[in-house]
Amino acid sequence: MRVLTVLGYVLALAAGVVLGQRLDGRPEPVARGAEAAPAPPVSHAPVPDGLTEDEQRTIGIFREASRSVVNIDTLARRRDFFSLDVFEVPRGSGSGFVWDAEGHVVTNFHVIEGGSRFVVRLADQGPDEPEWEAEVVGVAPDKDLAVLRIQAPPERLSPLPVGSSRDIVVGQRVLAIGNPFGLDQTLTTGVVSALGRELTSPSGRTIRDVIQTDAAINPGNSGGPLLDSSGRLIGVNSQIYSPSGGSAGIGFAVPVDTVRRLVPQLIERGRPVQPGIGIQALADYQAGRLGIEGVIVRSVTPGARPIVPASRASARRGADATCAATSWWPSTASRWPPSTTWRPPSRRRGSRRR
Image (cartoon, rainbow, N blue to C red):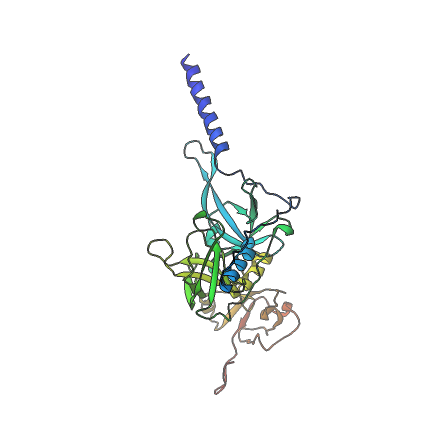
């Protein structure tokens, strides 16, 4: 009898756990492909009379750009200490925006850092419509950028027009759209407060030429777009400075020129392309132990795109050989011997660097 009672308690507990999971919050995200139904037409409330031209412009920019802004939920796997079962827990949420019609979504690296599954919700999705499963295409922790991809049909996607951060000036108006504290499609406005700021990236490297703004940016805004008064992307909202954790009027955005340079690399290669002359050199102490002054070339990167200088240069054999990779242009990298000493060309007196 006691065994039956204990068994009944166990069954009741299991049923309660299953029922709780079924009743818990939003529906389970499901990856959907191009067969998904087209988005319903977006209806907006009519603009009331009497608004200023500036207000009407802001309303128009928000209604157009908000279709590109998405909500990103990051989930992480955890293992139960007692049962050793693996389960998922929410790790955080942030914002992002549609980059192109192929389903690429740009966000901050720290939004997805440490996650095992990522769920994207588009601006036009209904409350009962399941979200989109996303895969990580590429990351650039040094610049706090990441690219996801969702299998959404092009008619559901609305890429943002991309501007330039080169011509930004202090005082010009900006708009930030995101999902602070999970409150989706939130608009804040402000101005460019300063330029040329520096931030520390999640990898510890310095991000330069950062845009400072007083537009309210809060937790959840990370990864969302910073727009100019024409609705063009000029930055990706990344961090805030605040002793309290809320907006204090000091927010920072990664400049769009950095985004334009890195995102195509992340889409194509999954990581940023580091500049270099295309050689793998031995450590300095190894050259010193051999009594060689200069750089010992261990290998050459053949045929990289863009073509690296070393793959188009040549050197003579021997410990005393020197070559200037920018001035010698033979045909192939095969003319490099397996181990060649390379010295940078010396400057003549009175010559100037260019």
